[in-house]
Length: 500
Ligand code: BG6
Image 1 (cartoon, rainbow, N blue to C red):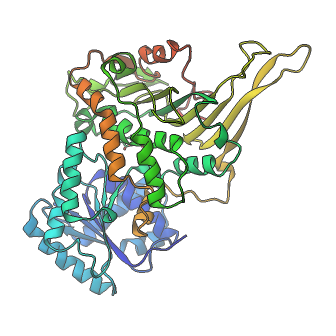
Image 2 (cartoon, helix red, strand yellow; image 1 turned 120 degrees about the vertical axis):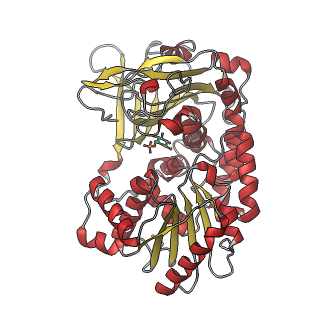
């Protein structure tokens, strides 16, 4: 594990939900596990007036409510936290930031002014903050590196993503820009690469000759919670599909990288995303299902409909569910369907990839002999399950489906970093491998643009009751090809935990 150089981390959007729920807990864990540099400062920046003391108290309270913390470690961690109130859209106010950073650098006795700027703000500020930083030379790397982490969504559609990119590149170079997609920080998503490219036994089968079709499911039990205002302008396509699911798809389908480094991996990711078969009007009509959740009682809990959620318009046509059958036009995958679905208020939280292998050429044990499946479970119960046919004991030759599985939890001594811990650490170490490169982000927007256009006036938006696996039409998407979605859970009677 490489410990980063001494540095300051400036968080714009310091009083926002992401900072409290993800960034500060991640930094706390890294600190508690001695993975942060011996000298570091965290400077929270937002408009609200707080003193360092009040801000520390607020973070301390939310951290202890979120999880178990060690009081002594928490005290030590909080000493590194500082706060600066600033109107982030007013370039003149950045003088205060420059001064504050100078003070901190002196206080911590930094030789180099290494600074990571984290934009955890509303997306409308992503184009503004880099310009303001540059005006005050805070992009200048003469005396220490300057890096920018930008949260998703990176743009709202293809055009806005391109303009945002141009705007940011006016002030920061590509090597300074880290576009975060927290799915790439998940251990099991990275494991897709190791699983594929470290094992001679799977890679030869990983193509159109042996694979029949692939399913990718990103299901959530949660609804939109308190984020209705944001979500209603975003929907499942922008919120989950354009970024997280397409990144997972890229990990499953990319060619082997020449080496394990940022450029080689990101070249392959970009290549495969540029091979996604463009969606035609027919595809939008026949291969796309958009849905929205309606009220229902699930495991004894009443769940309101999407349109009744706080911040959502009462006649909203925003999709909370998407299922799409799509193809990749390249040598490896030509003609193989990928069925990708994601939704909120489904029966449980589960993300998995299911690889369905082709059947044997001659069905000597009958047409219903079990198929070979490989299930790569990204969350929860991270692991891998392989299912295949064996002889059922007894007379005759009946094949029965059995499985072999591996659970990450069985690697007891291994400590898994959360996605934000891993990505913060990588950005501090200057490793951009797990951050989306501009060409990949653009390829994703290019692919989803027809869906975004179609969404303006969707011919159909199907309702589905909370706690179901989405609209029935999504089942028909597979049924018309004589297939079914894999049912990912053994048992979901009293709990929403979904075992592999
Ligand atoms: C976020 C989306 O990027 O990812 C959320 O904005 C979604 O709507 C979340 O709930 C899912 O992340 P995870 O790690 O819980 O699967």
